[in-house]
Length: 296
Image (cartoon, rainbow, N blue to C red; front, side):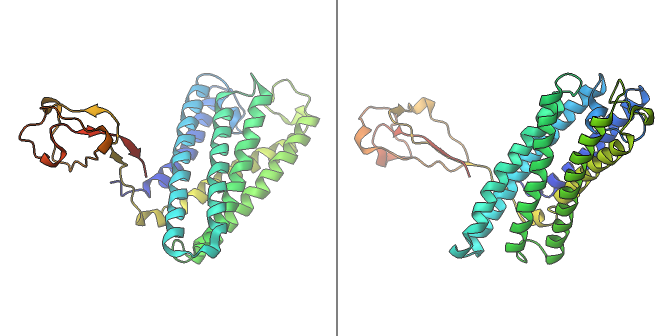
């Protein structure tokens, strides 16, 4: 049984800025980007920082997908235990939220693994999916937070999530609009090294600054779940064997300290001398088992 689930949002909160700052420092030291306000993806465009960037962001997206699933099951269990059938909106929002969140994780993977200097259209599409889904996921979870308040989270946490969602939405819109304007006015040679003389520099700084702010707001949003996840645990899945026409000989039967649940099929029992003097006399001379895996 896993009990320290709150470590998951904390790890994500630490890993996201650490990954970006690490690749930023490497890119600046190798003169691959300018010191002042590059896009996050600019810091992971060239080798060797691109390798670190891709690997780190893949790990982040994987942890985010796990976090979103845990949060989905958390809300679902809370609905079953405490909310009436009148609150079906919670279940619907919860299902849509995890799907939107996983789509955003897919967008993060695309952004990390398709550099802008190689396939700009794919890279930008992944970035739009990632940032857009992040803001939408935050709003959906914020609405859910108000429905489950105060049993799962406090009013203060719910209001904090409203604030971080507002920041993400404003930053996403600002970064998108300013980015379009800056690239329209850009007449330089290398967009990863944007100078004032290249045109559109002010809009570029606004766009990149908004992008960093968006990621910071989403990072803080994830951290707000650390406290409430201290009160949950995850059990390992239970496996029940129900496979038809499967026969265990006495020499092949595995004994363990764990409790063994055996289900017999009445229409598939046959008589052979396979388990003499066994501890399961009620099943005759042969056990025919079936398997079914049930994962919670």
